[in-house]
Length: 373
Ligand code: NDP
Ligand code: GDR
Image 1 (cartoon, rainbow, N blue to C red):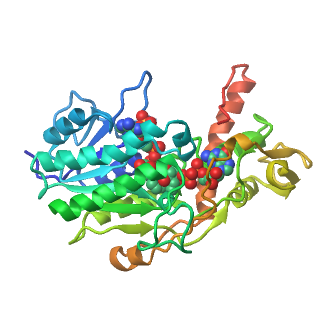
Image 2: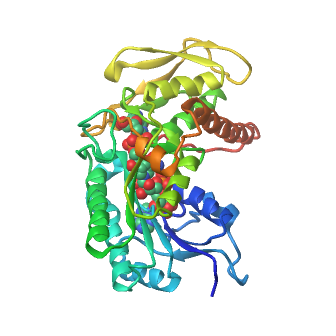
Image 3: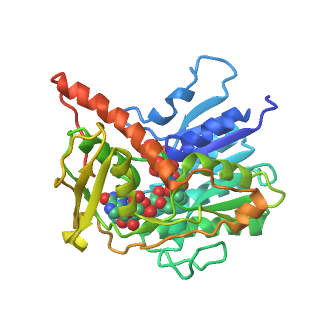
């Protein structure tokens, strides 16, 4: 028996899972995480937290599991007897959800139900608190600007529709069974740990590689999309705080500031001394290097470093998201600590180091590989 609080994190190998696990361990929790079986190692983001399974009294333990497997989830919940469950696991890529709608519904929608049912059937309704990773994508075709807790939802992708189910089943289990269950409606949050195919990381990785001459051009979809981007490290603290309240409630977490994808490209390039000018419209739009200052970038004025590729357009797009975090400010004491320029700087600096390593490997005659998804 331990007197430590016990947390179970699904999606522990993802961006938020890694930050949350580190945060909870620092708070003195015993942390259990669910990872998927994969044919190669998939624990890069949490390898620094790893503890040898042969050591007694570990406070960080991983279990194999999958949100599509009820018996597996129920067995893990029974074994771990968690005080808190953070359901962060999801097929979280909006564009991919159009390719895999049924799987996305299963994992992202029914997955939440499976965990709530495990809490209920195991008689843990009074003990275990439940956090559901809800999303600003629920607002989709926005009905109000800015979006807050009372703004009506209008999901625009199979991902968002699956998350809509998860949102409401969380509310329902709170109301029907008195389970402490809540939704964090989080707006986009990024970091150097962000998956490489989300637009921010795709941009910082590519700009760093272009600056070092490892890649010529970056292909993007809708550069006019507007997002409210915060830092994942800040946002996971709010996930924890939501489970420490007297009463379970749902909260919007956002910065209240909005930028376009184009702004994100411009800021990333400027960090490395490259000024980009955008010309044209829609599919014909390109980003051209205007000037280069400093010694970080090898590209030349006139070089086209951004092109539009319609393959990255979505069948239905979420054009604009801007959150109103007033409730979180008042009840959770939330103040976003990272501005977008600071976030961009942290991400591009990290990717520049990786790109420099790749450049050295390449100069030594070895091949490096980069995906362009
Ligand atoms: P990531 O994509 O980085 O991580 C998702 C995690 O879920 C990974 O650990 C992944 O495992 C795991 N996973 C995927 N499918 C399954 C499955 N079937 N069973 C078990 N595990 C699975 O997402 P983020 O960390 O960025 O986001 C965390 C959560 O918050 C997600 O639910 C996302 O939808 C939601 N969200 C994210 C926002 C953001 O801006 N980041 C904003 C609002 C909500 P593996 O590593 O093996 O792929
Ligand atoms: P999003 O994030 O869909 O908001 O979902 P993403 O970074 O994928 O897209 C943001 C916006 O950028 C536009 N875009 C591109 N997106 C990608 N991925 N690749 C491109 O090449 C590209 N070009 C333009 C997109 O069309 C979109 O408008 C993220 C995920 O983390 C979800 O899990 C989470 O719920 C929401 O944020 C809040």
